[in-house]
Length: 598
Picture 1 (cartoon, helix red, strand yellow):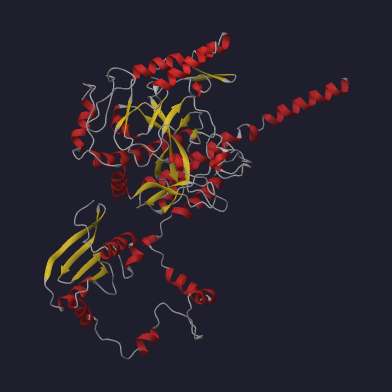
Picture 2 (cartoon, helix red, strand yellow; picture 1 turned 90 degrees about the vertical axis):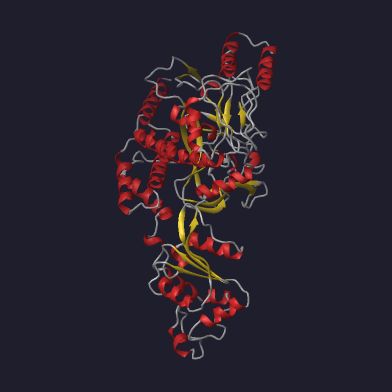
């Protein structure tokens, strides 16, 4: 017995010694959090630099990451996200409120002054007899359907979201979230909407949403804040008041708890919900823009085997300050209880307590939310979120199969192994090399070696067989521009102008385009050639637009349209793919190119 006691004591001492090791000083969840903060810092910082970022800027970001503390990196991520959300809010304002300055004045100066229903769908008859007096009035929003709003947002920002059948090869994949357009790495492409719950309310509030087959839309942040997206659904067709939960539902649950005769200490914990009910009524309701086309983060699927995630979650604390209230209607979240003041939380055993009053040292009040950030450039594809490496809350079997296979299931961010040097210089360069692979712009906007790549590819035997090319088994290698054609083609036309004239005389639509930086076939030379056709000009030299930028210039003749593409060289689609696509689309649709920014 004495020997056993001695061995047990030595074992306990060994456990204590191991527990003090730096390797075990941080739990796997915390290590995952730190790794995610590091990645978000790199992605969002690079995104904030914009399309003009250079290699030197990238090195500065690496240097900042290697020297910055975790707290400083978190602050920078929050600032980067806020800048993007502010831009998103401005785009939404331009759609809903053409007179933008007038709306800003209203938000700052106009109090609520009535409880009548607005033309925009506003109603204050939820939870109390009148509107709260401590929040700004919401001006009337322009009547725009969800579908129209989504398309107009795409024109403004370059991308939007839509729901359709998932492309994941699984029988239970169901509906998927798709990005329409293009979003570069580090872009906020989706909000995770719904009701937010503080850790203090987990077990003690009536009607707290439980994880079950009836609600797969539950997610938790690293700090324990839970977001339930089920009440939000897919938003609505009008701007409206939404309190997240119905008071009849809350009241029913309270009555049910009382009927069970809860007493003693259990009754004390249950009483924590009563002040929430009262303060909920006092606060009144929140005005949210439920037509938000990006409030669809809860529909992102888990990637199937062999597929990689393309977004990651980012906890974002939206500041409830005067400057932020202008875009508050576009933040698709509402707190359960009062989060108007900063909340102090203290843990005791398995319980969380809210304690103390807010003061000037507690920081500004915030609304704790989640957004989805791209991990690479996305272009017209399904949005995939890795639940296993996210902060999701025990995703359900029902989104996978009955045996609990990985599709749509979370392991609550389990991390197998991480070294204590997670923020070492070598780790940062490893992260950055991955970052460069997915987002580094090729100098000048195109790959100068693309011709070499194409030559190698089309000379592969399997490629030629698939294309049914070189069936005569010519021994000479394929070339992009074969000089033999120019030398041996003796009956080629000296000029293509007669052919163009014949086409226009026959009533066929002809568009000619040219890159305005093309040194081989300059725009000036093409304009001199077209002048020889003798066609009447119906619309002289004028700009056309690609979103908010000049895409080039056009001259419209009778039967022929000449288009220049700004910034493009000899191979126009290679230099300016977006503008080239717009040009082709308008030609096929028989539409003029836009003559004004949109």
